[in-house]
Figure 1 (tube, helix red, strand yellow):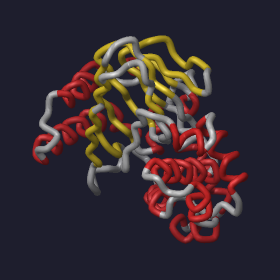
Figure 2 (cartoon, helix red, strand yellow; figure 1 turned 120 degrees about the horizontal axis):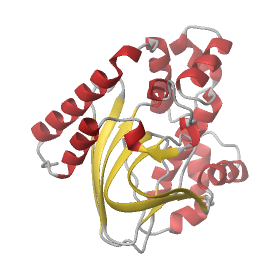
Figure 3 (cartoon, rainbow, N blue to C red; figure 1 turned 180 degrees about the vertical axis):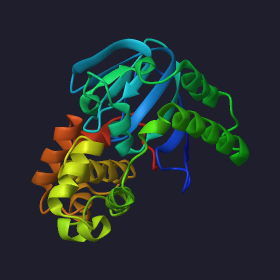
Figure 4 (cartoon, rainbow, N blue to C red; figure 1 turned 45 degrees about the horizontal axis):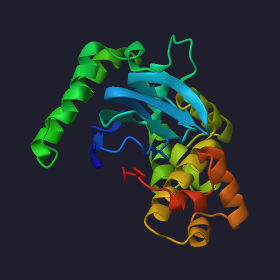
Length: 266
């Protein structure tokens, strides 16, 4: 397996978090994705996605992963390569405009959301030299430019809301509401309304996703499960396990023993 990912640096990361390239040589082992990002995934062969033993989509080559509350597996019948773009969570608000499908909990054909030109440039991520900073920067800038061109009429996100989301991510989702509000500088009610408008879920749900994502990274690195739970603000292992299973479909212990996992830091 090969995984290359490039996090878009500030201030160019307003709407795209990262670009990545993944290559899987052993299709007999699905890979687990404990991730809360919106993603466009472009595969060179047919893949299928499942969550908690439920099939999400028939095999396809271009997928939009709109599952902010989703963790699951990707399966294929042969080796495959995936190029992808991970978006900031508030882009959901723009991508979902005039759409009949609820993108918060869906995986759909990416061609219904993005132009062929945008998708073709995502495909080019397979051909760049990921060790070369210049090539990564040029590829990311081209994708950002195309994305802004396609959705330039929709850019209206409060800076205080973006700062609040960044703060939640930086603090691994363990802030209290009282600690979050100074970044937001508006009422609790307005904060909840903005989360539903821009991301499609509540602040608490988003915090849980961030915490479980952080826990999965720590567990993968070999950190003790109980210590992981306590460090992320859980009072006991049972509460942590219940939330982990709710998002992933498996327990932290089962997750720690799974093979062929793909996790990234960005």
